[in-house]
Image (cartoon, rainbow, N blue to C red):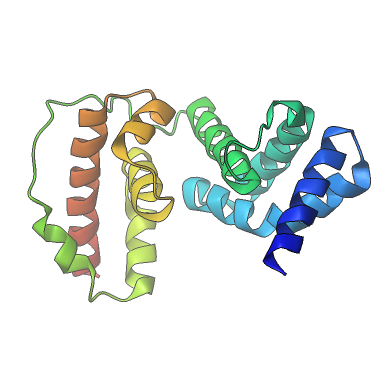
Length: 179
């Protein structure tokens, strides 16, 4: 069964590369919910996420010929959604004015403070973080990117990503503990 799913996915991708609108629509249906969630975690505003989502699918279908099966289609599409989301935030000037820092090192023991907290409190806390902090927390903890990848995506150094992550995590713990 799993082999058939993989074959179907590959066939849909190949047909989409040929411009088959039905195949593109089927791929859209398979990925729209997951990609919307990615956009929402970064943008938090439904209308912005919907706009970015549509732009991302249009871009993906226009650039289907560049997809080489070096990763999954979902991972490739997710990268487009994340990049579009970040570009959207930049145009709205919601990024922190400067993510560059002195590279302050913070111990990782604050992670244990998050574990017992309720998911709702964490969601509320994420919503209260400054945009730049929320981006790094989302990319690292939720989307699973490492600091080198985050640095590439946000055009910052790896050490800046690490220090901003630790600051964001510390601030999130503080916010959540105050709820």
